[in-house]
Length: 418
Image 1: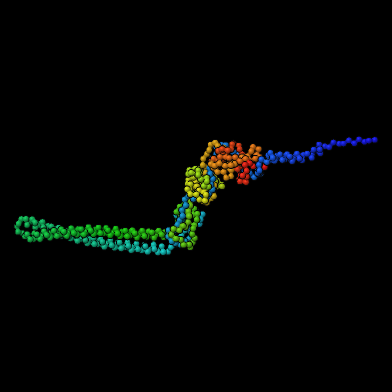
Image 2: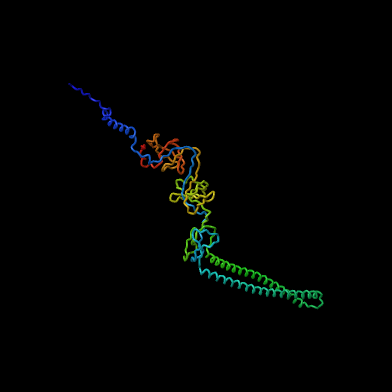
């Protein structure tokens, strides 16, 4: 008896699995060819920073860092050669105007002051003695002039009497006696006038000598004042209500005339000195608003000066505070400043890409809608701010671009984003 054995059909999976592997390989090849093969450079999305084009009011500003410095600084200097005897105050101490800060010493100046005082006293005594002698001579000359005046007046009376008698021709007065009296009267008159002139000359001489003595005394008094001032200058006092920023000497040190001793600064009169990169300084002008950030406070300021000189690629900008100093303001405090350049009412802008410059043309990578690719496009940039920059052309509202450093793929027109 024959037994019929029926064959079982194989499952579909076992029947077609030898064809699945070639199909998968073919599919991957097609994917790489159509999709991934479009670019020859790929990068991880997590390693990039993106920016999206926005539209609206755009604030143009420039940022700089710097420090707070006193607006009113005074250096106290030595006006004489001396030694430092004592340092009364230390840096950081608040002082009032007229408060002693440093005490200097110079024995020779003290000796010079005493000698000058003695010399002045001697000259005053000499001047007094000279005035007494002049007065005596003046009185003596006045007496001589009065005697000459009396002689003339007496002779004139005698001449008047003889003139009357001689005119009557009575013989009481001879012509010889009359002529003799007339000549004597004329001599007495001349002698009187000469004595008057001598007295007037003596007056002028006395005035001239007094003026000369007074000038010498005044010169000596000035010398004494200068010597006294030099001694007084050995005491160094605060010239303003301030804080002692620095003391440049120590006890026992010798200081020369003009040498700096101490630095004073008014605590309530500080300004911010910002260092702005020279590429950004073009639009910074006096009068622009500034926001000063002290890390603890933000206060308003205004640009008061722009240095005309570039130092190490930066320009110094001085900023005055508008609403008073912040509570944590101190000299040499590090601050940041944002200078407001202008406001643009309605424009396109995007977060500032690395190395993007204001008013320039740049090649940026715009991300595709599906986020898989980024293609290089030419973009015209306008005014730049601290963290954002204006878009003139090349991008539209909502476009997404890569703003991180693209130096690794800048030679490729299109990159793939994983």
